[in-house]
Amino acid sequence: MSLIPNQRHLFDIPEDVAYLNVATMGPLPLAASAAGQRGISRKLRPWTIPDSDFFTDTRALRPLLAKLIGADEAGIAFVPSASYGLATAARNLPLARGQKILLLADQFPSNVYTWREHARATGAVIETVAAAGNVSLSEALLNAITPDTGLVACAQVRWTDGARIDLKAVGARCREVGAALVLDLTQSCGAMVFDVAEVQPDFVVTAGYKWLLGPYATGFLYAAPHRRDGIPLEQNWITREGAADFSRLIDYTDAYAPGAERYDMGERSNFALLPALHAAVQQILDWGVANIEMTLGQQSRTLAQALEKRGLTTGPESGRGPHYLGALLPDTAPDDLTARLRSENIYVSKRGSRLRITPHLFTSESDIARFLGALDRHLG
Image (cartoon, rainbow, N blue to C red):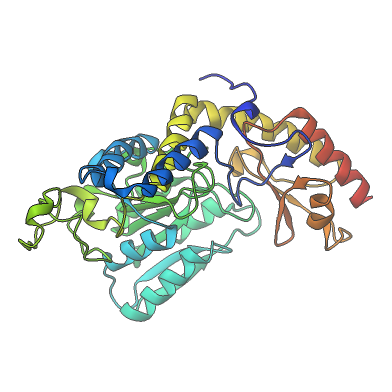
């Protein structure tokens, strides 16, 4: 592993902009924007698009997405959002009445509403897990997994504060009690190392517009080998066996393409979004996820120390994602703090009582200095 030098030259971020808000939306690299523009321009002359191109982009991108999480290509499906992937998982995870669905306190809404509906449909019971005292969120989740747990749905890091979950331990505990494990890696995929072989989840979902630095309305689903013969949300033509032969599409078949491809969204062959996502993911793989994690971890460590000196606690480094800072604000902090910072071209977000600070490889020392100086002024 090695530290990555500043990569601002690969992005369209003016020098007077301090963008520390990747957890809300990651910026497209210039190469991804160019790829997307080339892709959408093809639609100007649709007669130049051969039938085979409905399959070209997905075939090229599927193995790259698999590589991000240490998966096999056959386990990857294309989805437009995390909620779509979660709904697919729910459709294929039957639960018995009274079984528990474990969720984290303050979990992202899409990863709550899906399971509330599933609980209503199956008679399962939602149990929300929170940290307490000296017990971390990860420890609390492990303690809550019991033989009556049917399903655990969580993230690698919590979106509000970056609290880190020990997914290897959670996965092992789920297997001990026979519970399914569904992961939303939207706030970590591309910034933290993850290996499906180590964790062994049933399903993984990831939206592409945050740490994957891809376009909105892109993402992917991973299904474990024993979850690849389920029921998709849609019954579309392109996921069927033999779909590449357009002359025989009316030879209807109940057979799906192999692997998790049956879960692909309709109109997956997006000629604008997929090339952009491909370029963004390729850039992440070129940097190396382990190198990104180490570089962002060092960046966050330095920033956390500066925040602690100002009385803004971020919690122990071992308990949060290395790319994620949730600084606890004092009661005296102005309600419009993020708006004040935005007026100075400094972009962060507020989640609850915490200031969420999520820089990336394009963040400069000048950006951090401007941010800290602005905090000194506005927090007094």
